[in-house]
Length: 261
Image (cartoon, helix red, strand yellow):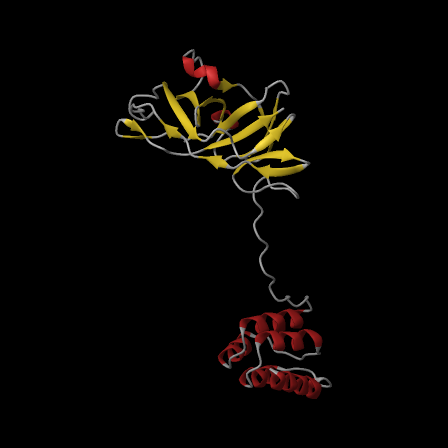
């Protein structure tokens, strides 16, 4: 590496007092200098180039790289020589802002910081086949679920503020807020599949209405009422219920939290 630096410095010194030409570029390319080094010399030193079509072809055939040719053409035309390409900027996640989460999921504000709500696996107890909309329409069906353990790992206090980052094409109205009921060593609940509008079944007993405000693409802010009461709760995301044959399978997850006094 030190040898190459010495060679570059020596070449630059020899050529510092003379204008670079097409012939000089061909010599530099044949000597094995990198394109970046030659482009730097083209940008910094005077030059007397011929940029006719045949001359450019001759340079190319002599091993002069495209970046050098672009710098030469720009220099000959009096335009600013193109800078070396910079690394592409990382694509910003839709809706992400400084200090805001960017990954899909649900977060709650704790001590002024967004904290991830850790999900838990739901075990479905009720059997039944859910028809698809493409076949015979969506069938609204009550189902029971339970979650192992008596308390969520996520502990929070009122007032409760959540940030829900949903998948592309998913609305906040597709999420359900559920009150979980303690039963021995697990928490259980009842909900409904196939939509909740105009639903008067017993599944409504555990569902809590809430509103979400869209603050960015796929980002929804949810503030829960202060009178919600201590207990176990969870957000059930869309697609958390599926079926295998005639038995509900353990598909998806619930974002649970424990509201303390």
